[in-house]
Image (cartoon, rainbow, N blue to C red):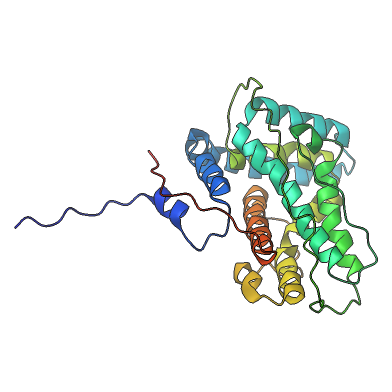
Length: 283
């Protein structure tokens, strides 16, 4: 009797089917499609190294010439132009989506803790909304809410406020002609260069360190909701570990995934659910 055919499973099918991933299946599909772009396979490994070398050189020279090399408005214009002309619409939509998702998380904490702080308003719905120092504001919001929580005793409120956990329709300008359609990780490596040029050393360090507060936010969400699930996604990124010599684009990508997981679980706690598609074959 001939042996049964050997199984040859697809990594992408398994990732898409993974029942432990709490995200909407359409978002999972977008992330998978982005990871399967040719630029992710061929360009990202090279661009990742070149970007780190460029950032290191900029950091060294900035210690000698400690002034702002590029106006923040110019940085915004360059990044928006690059996203319009060189990055795939799916990657752009995921990036815009992250700003909304993180604002939703910040506002959930504000609404469910006794902090003297109004909800933040950074919820761009279009690519153009990433201008006007949105990247800087997005980092500052993290610091503001943490500082506002100083001396506040965290506990689960008698009633949780799940307001504004929606993600509105997002305009990634899909109809615009693009010269390239890069994946989000390659794009982050390239965008990190003008970002480091436009910010002062202290501003750049502050922006990088904001990602280390992911574990802090997950712990706060766990205490406020009384749900330990959030703790499962901690990465051991202690906020007291002050090291900016890291792979920033890689950390940003992981940070975005953690925010998506936490946000999806809040939606579930609010009584919502993410639809699961039937099996999808990835060619």
